[in-house]
Image (cartoon, rainbow, N blue to C red; front, side, top):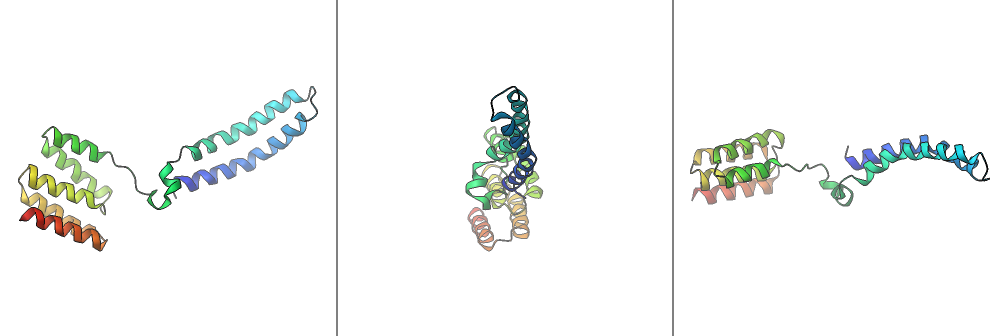
Length: 158
């Protein structure tokens, strides 16, 4: 279940609990008198009950609200770490980090492409590129992504 749906369910559940507090608080508040002081506390309880689910809904990522189909794909900072290792010429560490990403997201084409690129262009190790290519063919289910993988592998091998 995505964050947006769970936040909406959480908000609805808490709203049902908070509603009696708002009704009682407004009933006590309307004739401004001594009873208005406890009404403020009753309204505050209702507001507290709604605060956390409203915050969860408002802080859910904008992409999950605007583009629900892409909400399930997590941002993976390991690409950034691997890229920084490449910039530092620590190619073995970068390759290790990229290979660690495969079990976490085996259907992500970018992982295999980056491994092949690193192995061929920086490390001059075609066997590592071939291993990534084979793993990609095994794990990728989308035919267009498989075609892209084959095309890039052929480009590297020529």
